[in-house]
Image (cartoon, rainbow, N blue to C red; front, top):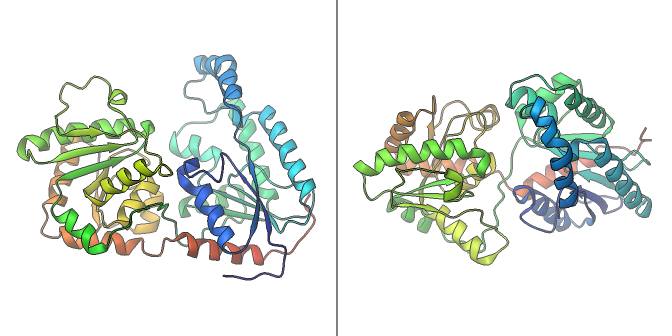
Length: 390
């Protein structure tokens, strides 16, 4: 445990309940839990808006904007109304806890502007990165309002930490600010039924199961995988494809769905039955495949690697920054054509090097622990001297 002579109280602000594992890929839960292991006393603030407000916004604002501005990203949480409401909540909790050591915000848009308690902003990517770098378009005029605001929020905070190195590089250059990356990432492991490495490796050697993990935002990649599997299953009838995070109805009409395809929908790790099913599927997965363009569910990929699972993805910058341009723990897709995906799966699971892929996958993420990550983060907090926040 890292000691500090400062107060051990931290105001911890997150979208969603940070005591619930289901919030934001388990990150608020594991982040806060590991801070508590280091002796910090957390004052938690959930800033997720009420569902009714989102529904009202979508019905009365967002759907009309969509007519003239397709695929806009101006949700309720990007609005001035939400900021006013949220800063009011932040002001109140800070007023009640003026002896706090730090304010930690699990986002890039809020900070402490009320006294000298330092702010740490922690996130994955910025709003303008979603538009400029992921959607690859110019922001609409109303999206520019939030981009400008978020830039100022980042400048005001004493510490800015990005989960991904490419985000750190982009924001540091684009905003002319000091954004940090701690040199490692994290595995959001909540397994309640651990088995030995030997048992996992034996399960994989004997397995015929291909696994996909991802929500409906990865649906195009899921459809391509299904098409590739339909081809492979004719040649290898023992193969089985499992989908976590999406349902059969999400796929839509698909005449070619084979009988050896299973859909499990969203599995909540905090629910014992779901937890056991999730990790049983992970233990028995021969390979994890997510052939999505642009981004391929980083969190589930590294968790699979932690369980000796080779991964097949189209590499994106954040992933290559962490694991390099040469993949010896699975397969990097040069494109996401159905034939390419099918060939990659076949070449991986039937490779004479399969066992080494499994061991290498585990090796690549062995340092990605929340315990080590929080220790690095605490060291960053200890470097900050209390100064007046403007």
